[in-house]
Length: 209
Image (cartoon, rainbow, N blue to C red; front, side, top):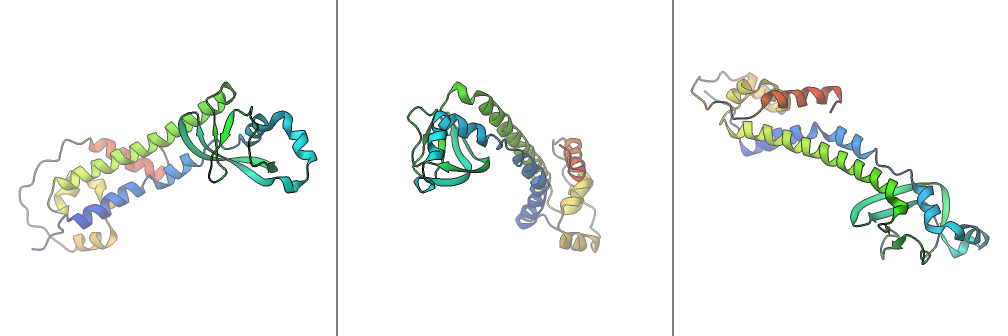
């Protein structure tokens, strides 16, 4: 009798589907980046020079509706802070600005200064949320991968963890439905918290976690 074997290709397809369960949630967390600080950053960068900048002809400046912040202190952030309107952007920052201009892309580094304390804290909290959801995605995918690695064919893997069916590609589901497997001993389910995996899978349907 034919069986659906758990090949390298099938494993990659199933783990890819497992990882994809987190795509929308990762994007949703990334979309909460604290980028509305643009006007605050602009004011702190140029402060007393803004009235003078506004008196000079526009040709003296580039115009921008965002500030690209590559780093805050020693931490990479790579965020585009939005401005409420297009503002004048000089080729250099003032010498007393709590930031420095990078040599590429118009990006800047905010120096490790008390001026940026609250902003930095908000960015760190956001980056921690992003890291947490990515870690959860990786742990879920690794758990699914361990189940697949414990069996040579699909049927016993499904018996060990029935929700695995949701991650199986459609063409493989169709093939599996056509097959009646010969019963034979298989390894016990690996030491994996399948209850946790099931909870993660259920949460993905409801947009939770």
